[in-house]
Every structure is written in structure tokens, then in C-alpha cells.
Amino acid sequence: MTGDIERVSITIDIDKDGVQHGHLGVPHSSDESAWGAVRVPVACVKNGEGPTVLFTAGNHGDEYEGQLAVHKLVRELAADPGRLQGRVIAMPALNAPAVTAGKRTSPIDGGNMNRSFPGDRFGTVTKMIADFVYRHLLPAADAVVDIHSGGRTLSFLPFAAIHNLPDPDHHAASLAAMKAFGAPYGVIMTELDSAGMFDTAVEEMGKIFVTTELAGGGTVSAETIAIADRGVRNMLKHFGMLEGALDRPHGTRFLDMPEGGVHVADDPGLFEIAADLGQEVTAGEVLARIYPLHRTDLPAQEIRAKIDGVVLQRHFPGLIKVGDCLTILAQDMAEN
Ligand code: ZN
Image 1 (cartoon, protein in one colour):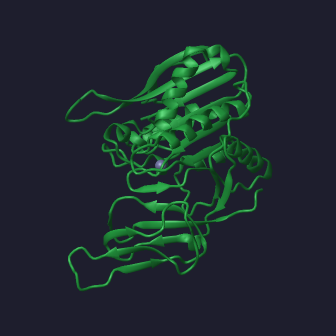
Image 2: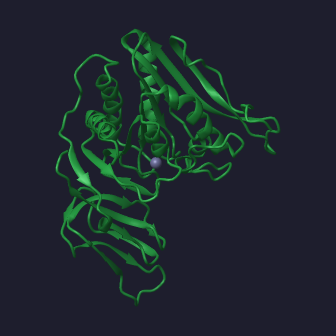
Image 3: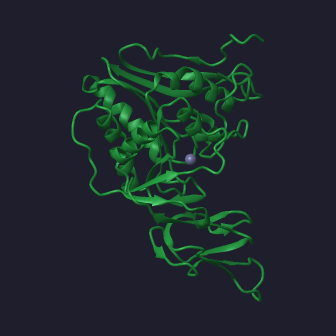
């Protein structure tokens, strides 16, 4: 094969003015469909000159606030594209097979989209999607907003986040965008393992990248949907693409995630949570207990807070496996 072959196709032209609804076509020959293709929805609304924001959701298929918010935003902009100054590219189901399955990763190839960048045009379906986005859509974008939640196995306090970035101007512009999103909590993250992340791919191109974790458990609430809806519109107002003041009904509390705040299960069993999301705890306090499933004579294992902090994340299902991330404590950060 030569390096020029494009395997993934796109049905819209992102350089054209107006409203376009289409999809990526990703070849996938299977027992069920020999000449089949996976479709990844993509919409573009462009009006005049202005910045380009790429909104993505369904990076993980079982996280729903973002999928809903992007679907709703496209419909709203499409109804009145003259309100927009610039260009919105919207992908509500970035890992479409995972979205269809309601799972974090793709049932086709097991691909975790957020570990698949910069992608591979001759790789699996997940890698091909990542490669197309990386080579054809990211270069066109000034900013990327990738909306995550906890999915079926985690739940979070609703926060918007950026990473610590080495270039001060890049960091400041990203921080300003994260603040504008207007989530109740804001986190500046340092990833332990950033290889393959969409975040890293975007940041290395020098673009602004804002992500979120908005609750989880594989479902949504009216409150978290409202945070996502306000956030995507606030992004467009922040970049001067929609008129109007930012809609931030509450302040943002800035939190840090120190390494000592992560609590991981050493034993399997029944999960008794003792400190809910948002609860303030002190070091030594019991966060959770894990009961062995089949023994009544053994004591529950107590999970005690390693640091003072606020409960930022919790494991969601009632059963625990060894190595599950049980709860993360965060601490207040001086606003910067
Ligand atoms: Zn996610």
C-alpha cells in the first residue's frame, strides 16, 4: 500500500459555508457485512469568518452528557446558522461502535479511543477514526472540547479540566477557556500516562483543549445535562462565535488531584461507600468498606483516607474487583 491511500471517507466539506450533516465512512469488512462500513456522524455549521471549535463526545461510548449536548447544539445552530460567527465541527459519537454498544471501548476491536491517537490509517476501526480526525479535522480547529463523564464504572463531581502545559501562553489560553465552560468544579490535571490520548494529540498541535468529567454511572441527570449544555454554549461565547454573556450560575471551585488521593482496591467484594461525592474528609477517615462475598467470619476491609480532601470520584457499581479505583480525593487549589 502507498502512503497516499485514504481508507476513511467523509460526506461533508468542512470548508463550505452553511449547515451540513454527514458522516465518516470507515471500511469494516465483517462476517455480518462483507463490504460494510462503520459510520461516524459529523456535522459542520459554518458562517463567515471566525474561529473553529471541534466538539467531540462519545470518545467513550457509555458517557452521555456530551453526546446529548453535542446533538442538541447541532440542532440549535442548524436552525439558525446566522447566529454563529465561525465554524463548529461536531462529532457526538466519536467512537461510534462503542456508542452503539453503550460501552467504553469499541466492541469491534476493543479500541479505547482515548488511547488510540494519533491513530493509524491502516490500523483497526478505532485507529482509523483517530487517524482521520488527527490528520483532517484537528488541523482545522482552533480549540477542541471533548466531553467525558465517568461512564458505567465511575462517577465524578462535575468538572471541566485542562492539563498543565509547558508553554505559558498556551496554558493561559486553555485555562481561560476551561473557566469559561463554567462547570461547578475546575481541575488542572497531570496525567500519569498521557500516551495515545486525544488530549495529548490536540495539545501537541498547540491547540486549546478543554475536557470534562460530568458525573457518570452510565446515565445522566438534569443537573449534569444543564452543565454540559451551558458549557458548550459558553465555549462559543468565549471564542466570540455566539453573542451574549457567559452563563455561569455558580462559581467554579478549583481542585488539584494529588497522587496520594487515589485509593485502589486490594481485595474484591461488596462495596459499601462511606463518603459521598463532594463530602469533605480528613486523613484516616473511613471512605469505604469492602465485604468478602462468601464469608461471614471475615471482617470488612476498611479503606481510609490517605489525605484530607473532598471526594472527587467514586467507583460506581456495587461490586469491587482487585485494582479498581475506589475513590479519589482532591484538594483546593489556589486559583491561577
Ligand atoms: Zn471518558
